[in-house]
Image 1: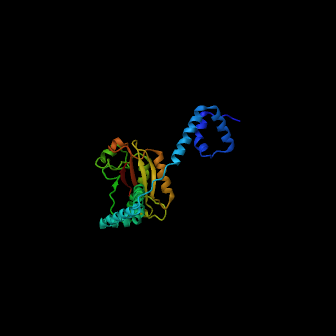
Image 2 (image 1 turned 60 degrees about the vertical axis):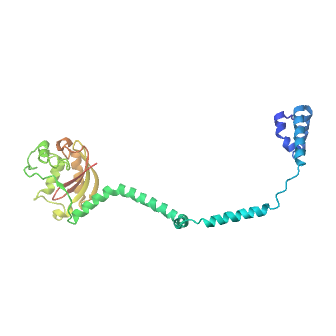
Length: 275
């Protein structure tokens, strides 16, 4: 038989006095009480208190308690009916559980649309410019050949060519006159050049988006209108890899990095975008 400590025994006093413990537990508690006068005295006090409480009479409620409660409830109901909410409050209470889910959904849809439009806006702008060009629309373009006094078929330095385009260099980067891209554009813009396909020069324009960096090098970013003959695009990418396509940014006094839209065909044009 295991012996219980005083702390363990005190935790069982309430159940012990109410005779709600098992027989083995009662035997163990009795054994502890026989040996511990403190716990035995505490049990005696609890039993005396229990007997005193049980001998107390229960007070009776007032006879008119039910009537008093009924009267108070009637007064409260009358007060609530007397103070009616305004029409706007009643309408708001009516619409709140019905309109709130649709309001939250609409607000979330507006935010989602705004985020998608912001992400796709550069592509929309490029496609719009391509469509306007194809439809004969007016698109503000800056040609790389705006200064006729310089002939790209004759040797000219990068600095001289950039100086000749000084009013436009900040918005549209100048081609490197000795670069592979300039040679390619001369081939397409020469009035006697032969073209792929049936010889219709205007039938196979291509529109591309190119990133131009501070040292004049460039890389293909996107193809807005691919050419019918894929060799044009291959030659364009090859020209970008062979040499710097544009003059350094310091020559044009332009930002170090620009995004340009290039139309390659009988008329080579560049539309610039800073970012």
